[in-house]
Structures are given as structure tokens and as C-alpha cells.
Length: 350
Image 1: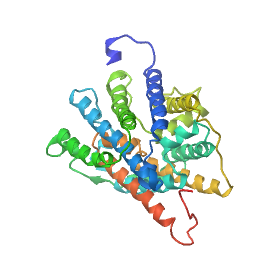
Image 2: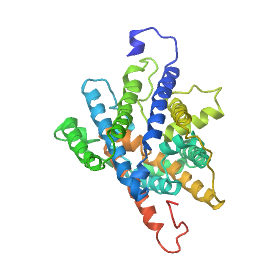
Image 3: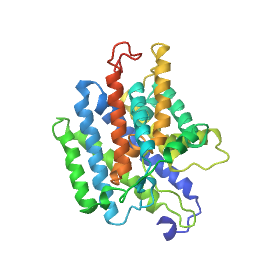
């Protein structure tokens, strides 16, 4: 849209980088204040779980509602997005989601939460993210790519790619899914301020879709539509850091930079900056294994708890709902195994 209206000499990738950084900085600040994390909502400490569910559910509700609204007015174009293909790589998504969920339990946080925490001085989070980014890149384009290709080759042909194609259309199914999500939030008892912050997090999702699929699209240099996600962006961020002179960063690396800047700024302003590391050497193995599983799983599943779980479900994708369910199952499975006698990892909430 912008490039059709004006003769802009700046590369579209540069503008998308700046756009991602702006949205990311808002997400980073709001995410730190709300402690936004699916891990806390599913298998976090019992006294925090209900409020965490309300935060996540409120973000999901706003993401679905605002995305559907912008789609209705033609301000989002995601028809060609990989999550809206009716050829469903079922094994890749299920196994990837389970791997990611297990890894998320081992590291005590999803990639979005760890990105936020790393900017506040959490060295465990920074370690996890470095391993996660390397393994994700290896699964996309490196030595682990054959696994991605093999599992992705088993595809289930569906008549529809998402709920919006079913009888009733996107409006009816959005209302149904929002009503289900609302049951998480209504009885939580969290403050109106926290619900408002959570809603703003969800509203960032359609803004990302709008910016990359309509507003900042160059018809002579098209780029894929995307919004908040942390698997591919961290992989791209790592590659950009290594070979910055040969590539131009786009939305993904900008998003990562923005999230860390926003989180750091709020932490500095509120006095939350604090260095945290590993309490014992054995923890490095646990966190490293969890990071590796999240790296592989995030690529196989087509996204993380935000990329598939929040962004993908906002466009009512079947693949995204399957990935989200698999992630939750993996996290719950790891939580159950951790209580088994003689299991190597005795506690996940220490």
C-alpha cells in the first residue's frame, strides 16, 4: 500500500525491520509487566496459573477479534500463508509441538518469555535462546534439515485449511472460539489493568499482519506476510549477527531487537534489572536440552507458542490449533514425567 502511494527509495526490508522493532518494543514492555507466558498458564506454579491463563486468554481473544475485523475490511491478506494450507504436515506439527512443549517445561518458559527475561539480565534465558536459535537454524537449513523434510513429507489433505472456511465463516467461528477462551479469563479475578495490558498484547498480532501483508508490501519486491513469532525470527537474527554485511534484516530480526529493547527499558525504569545465572552446573544440561528440543520443535510445528499459538490461531488455522494443542500436551507430559520416581528431572518448578 505505502509503496503504491508514494515513491519510496528505502528498501522494504529496512522499513519492515523498523516496523518489527516498534511492535517488538511494545510487546517486550507489556510482556514483562504482564508476565505473559503460556508455560505459566499450563504448568506454572499453582498459585499463578489462573492469572496466567487469564492473561494469555485475553491476548488470544483480542488477537482473534482484531484480526477478524481487519480481514473483514481487507486490511490483512494472509491467504497464501503456510499455516493456511490445506495440506497439513500432521506428523511434523504433532511431534514438533510435543518437542517444543517438553523443551518449554525444561527451560521453564517459552521463547517469547525467555527473550523478555534475557533483556533484564537473565543469563539462563540468554543461554537457552542462543542454543535455541542455533538448533532452529540447523533444522531449517543445516544438518537437521533432513528431519524437517522427512516429517514434513507426510501430509494430510484437508478440504479446508481453517475454521473460517467452515459453515458460518470466520465471524461465527471467531465468536465461538472467543467464547471458549473467555472461560479462562472471566473467573480469574485479575485486575482490569492487567486485562487491558493483555488485550494490547493481542492487538499487536493483527498490526503485524497488516504491516507485512498490506501496508509495507512492495508489489515489485514481495515478501511473505508475517507477524509475531520467535522461531524463524531468532534463526534470522542469529544469521544476521553472523553475516550482517551480506544480508539485509527484515521484520523478524527487527522484532527480536525491539522485544529486548522494550523489555530492558521497562525493567530499567521499574528497577527489575538483575543478573541471574545457573545455580549448579547440572542445570546447564537441562536448559540446553530444553533449548534444543524447542529449536527442533518450533521449526517442525511451524511456530512457537506465539507464532503458532497466538498468531496462527488468530487467522483460525487448523495447523496452528493442532500445534498449540501439541505444545500444551508436551508440557503436561513433561510435568507428569517429572513426578515419576527415579526420573532424571525431579522438579520443573524449582
